[in-house]
Amino acid sequence: MTYEVYKPPTKIDLYTGLMTHYVIKGEVLNSIFGSPSLGTTVYVDTQFYDIIVCIQYDYMTGDVYPYTFKQINIIENHHMKAFLSAWDL
Image (cartoon, rainbow, N blue to C red; front, side, top):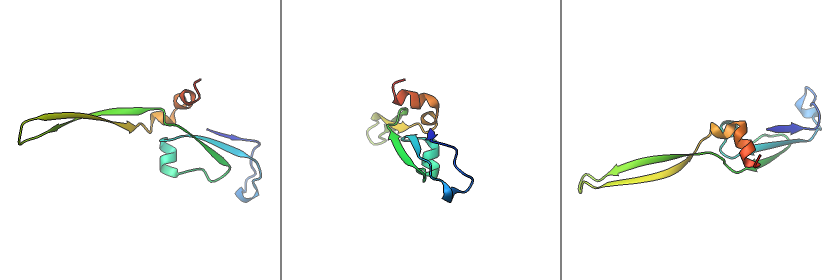
């Protein structure tokens, strides 16, 4: 989510306004394109994770070892509900 003081001119080198970007860590566009180059960026904690459940099988003993891990959900962190959750709204 980006806020700016006023509409910037068409040429990027003439821009003098103030711009603040609020970015959820783990959000898909920030992951692909990186941090915004203009203004300041405020990073907010990741809001949505997927819990992945895996099972490892030991062929020598026949034992099964289940384990879980958290993976960032980059799509859910892109939606407005992630931003609202980050600010407890």
